[in-house]
Image (cartoon, rainbow over all chains, first blue to last red; front, side, top):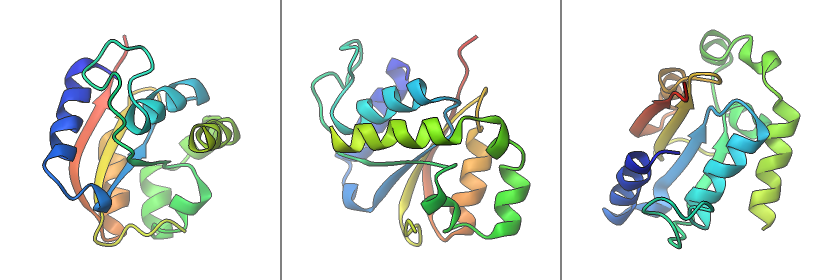
Amino acid sequence: MDLEEQAAIQRLVQGGERDRMIVILGTPNSSSTQMVALTLTSGDPSYAGPLAGVPLGLRVYHILEDEVRAAIPVDVYEREIGPMEFVLDKDGIASGLERVRKA
Amino acid sequence: MVELKDKLVLALGERDGVPAPALQACAESAGAEVIYAETQCFV
């Protein structure tokens, strides 16, 4: 997650309505998913960006998680996500996110 | 199921995964308002 993106999200959260905010990721694997999720919940683990030591506490989900898919009309999901559901490591991504949520 | 209706969604896509416009289309179809959409590219 680059520094500009961290700063932009920090500004959005500071603008208010954090309780209504949900992050949906399209990251390609477990490690990138965990890095972004950690950054947006407990702070930048690399201590390189503006979110270092800043626990935003956002709710973070991945588009491949079953509980997210269930909220989206089937035809839209199939058109927009399509084969990526089978190409990406869905189980690894989901378990990585679970680890972040339990941390 | 995650409740997306009337939520403010930040769609963080990645070129090697799912890009932000696809995340945005999904979120909006579920009744969310997308307030940030960005596709990262690490090449």
